[in-house]
Length: 170
Image 1 (cartoon, rainbow, N blue to C red):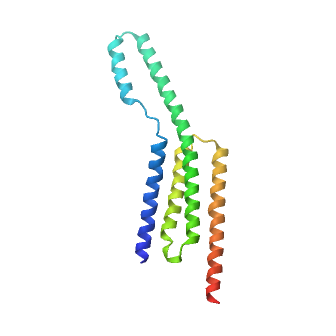
Image 2: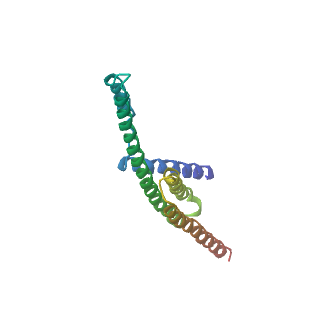
């Protein structure tokens, strides 16, 4: 029975993690780089500009650099927003798993733990994706909320199990 619980916990973590990130992608898609369009524009510029016409080529490359800078700015904003979204969802999922852990019997705790792992993975993903796009104050605040939730909840959970086991021995 323990093997089934472990498999269920791992499966829950994997499926819920995939579902969270597919949901984020579905409702907040990542900006796409227009590589294909840039390659077409590049070949068009080579045909349009004569090989000796450096002014024409410089103008084309300036436009291409501007588009690349716009894309990087958009991607930076997207990564910052993804940091916020992934952390909010991760914290909510982790807290939900924690609450389920209080409600379940000792034998069937693998699914709530899998839910908690999926929430933690979302948090880690959000940090990884938005690290360079988010200011340190926001990272600290979100990290503080996570630390209070994980450490405080763990202490509360351990006290509860200790009191429950103490009550069973009497």
